[in-house]
Image (cartoon, rainbow over all chains, first blue to last red; front, side):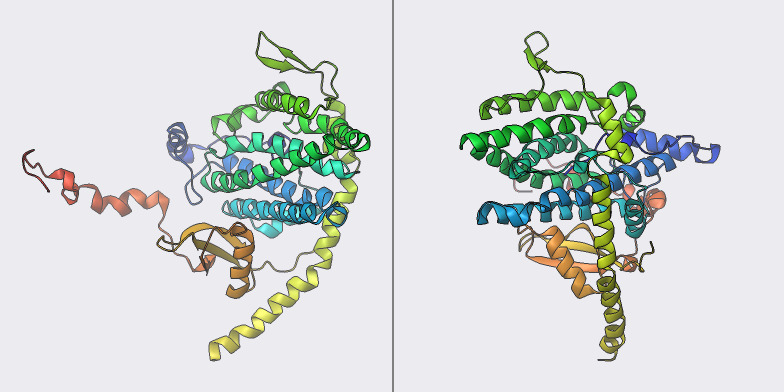
Length: 331
Length: 96
């Protein structure tokens, strides 16, 4: 479903190649310069590898944790069609997590290690999933806004310099488009429904708008890794560029729904040909990133208990395979 | 919190339709080949992206070393005569 803004929130990596690796490093930089893709066994600077491991694994974690707020509504979806669609969407999010863990593993890190970091609370994931899904309209708002923001973030990553990440992104973007459209369809149905349904849609927009706008991460002035990530062509646009683009395309969609975006300062600027928008509450952003959002604790608890409760299955499957192997060899 | 030993990694190759070759798409963890096929189906073909799947233990793949690529592929580098464009044929000669 999502990444971004995250890449600038982890630990610092310093790109300081030693003399011995200087030649390799120059060759690497020139490949990046020529827009060549870097593949798993190719030489790459440690900092490039670490940046990718951090970004791809945070992205994978986000997909997995992102299953929780939506999974919350599977049993209460209003129709069988909505339920089937929501199940398919949540399965996709799980699949996206798998594509991304698979891409991260090509960098020489074990999946177990990454999962361990998430469960220990040491890894970050997108802070948007620390907000609760209180009504059915939230499922519409997530598809429309959260997946919409995610697509905007992810399309440029399809051209990322690291091959496996770029290829995973192509696959993900193709699937996300269904997510966003089904979300908008839910919003449209509610917006054209009864007064109570319209109010429900408006309430969801009120709660999800600002967290969605924050999904693009800190402003460029505060994003310490953006410059390096752009030089390495991991990132193609800055957080603020993507955020502006998101607002520009989403505001007219809200107009179509006849819903009001909860920003009194939002207005079209005919001079810049962009929407102007109000100040983002960065305190809230940092609070949620640091673990103090409405659902941070609940999300991690859910992942931990799923992991623990699945332990016997993982162990039994392994034991069964170990037992079958000599039999198969003997047959 | 401790983790149980990781399930082995399998590389996944998918034939998108008959007439095309299998192509590498990613990897899955599984205890054996049969489970790897099922996981590959669930992860990589939710929208009928394939008609056939191969899985192989990642540890069973031998790969050439990119750092040695220049030397490794060198034998083909100076043999331009292997390409049809190497040969000059007069314009008026047809069907060649």
